[in-house]
Length: 260
Image 1 (spheres, rainbow, N blue to C red):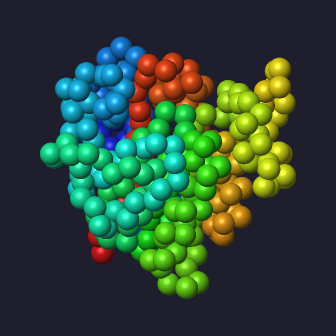
Image 2 (image 1 turned 90 degrees about the vertical axis):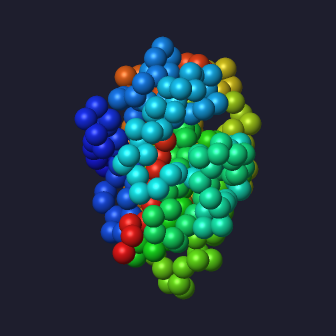
């Protein structure tokens, strides 16, 4: 279930069901200062957009957060950062931590990832005391970024803690054509994952990335998984999509534990 929301006039967001003790949402491309293919709320500095416009967009976003986000240098890997040992990297523009996921148990610490077709995934304990976010393209998903994120969270939680996850806007199967290498990356160790691939043209496959993520989350022990059902490729007016246009911006998924 997708729940539209608005942080500010002209700044819509999308989220899932409310979670006690957790705040989370994904931005859209609407409501910012960027122009051209980056129009309008591009939050990615690495996209060749005007840096001044990205600064304005991030400043607009910051007004609605309890603290500066901890941005990551995402590399389509499976490394998980302990955000409680890191500092937000925005003020001095120092090098970003290289990771594709982050976890925290500290209220008010804002986790952030950027996407433009890849999966943004938020994982939290149902008691609202532990939180993680992950950027999962097919490489990171196959490499175990979601399992690694949950493992890092379990180290910080009580035995018997139950978990929930939200899989945000991403490219859908009808638009995500992949080669046999992607098919084999998922089915070599999990043959039943083939159910989430449909035959494409000329030895290609149409991959259902959100469904593959849900499968892996459930197998890892997540009790509740919610898919947004939003396709970034199909909604050009609302979401950036790298596959639709490689010159594009990035939306961000933000999450934090509410201060008690």
